[in-house]
Image (cartoon, rainbow, N blue to C red):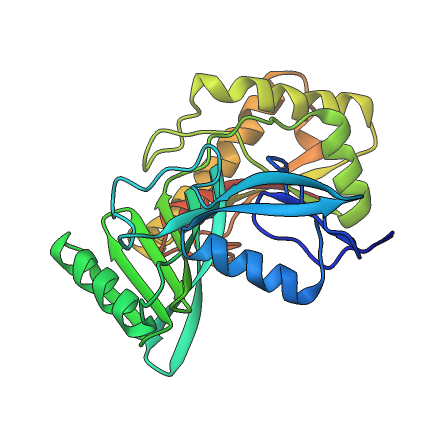
Length: 316
């Protein structure tokens, strides 16, 4: 018998052995060994949510097998919006903190916007007879009724909507559509800097951004949860006695630029003061503030502003 792999499809495992057909359906991520015509036939059956019994012969024996379209295992609709009636979920994905690139701006001239936070993606296959325009208008109307603002549309293929911290993105082909919902939020810092990692990055690039040093809002008062990270900087200085560092303060763009400049300087000085109080010679350190002038992320989102509020260490 000749067996060949043609492609992948949903989360089923389907095998085709020619010239005698044996179709096997499993739950694992799919690998299809199928003639192209047979693959298309099976795809259409699943898309139309039909349940059929497939009979295949092997050495004069008949093997019946139920082949039914159903939602992928573990996938459920978003509570923010229902599916197009009669559709099935082919696959889905959920990430505690992920990033999506969505379209915003004028129709026909979109700009890319990156949003980060709780990320969910669904791929739906619609029922037979549903048009691309029908899917688009149904979803658009549902979003408007739910209070979403349409921020970009290229009817009937692409739609972006926004409400509060939730961003919705649609890519629509009619017989199937993909939707992404991101609820923007600040990433929870779970990995902290250590002396070895700081040293490697400084030796490689001459500077390193340090996250985990926290201050009172609009103040230069260092919060107690910052001490573990500051301790690693002190350890870095102790294990590299020739190293001299400039501590640089950076802010987001919230507030008045002149005030942010002063705040960044005071925060850099506060870090220097902490290090000198913990055994690092003052001659090996200097402080400089850059205010909001050197962003590393988009200041229009909370996630971006969180990345811009940082301390950097630069080798002198």
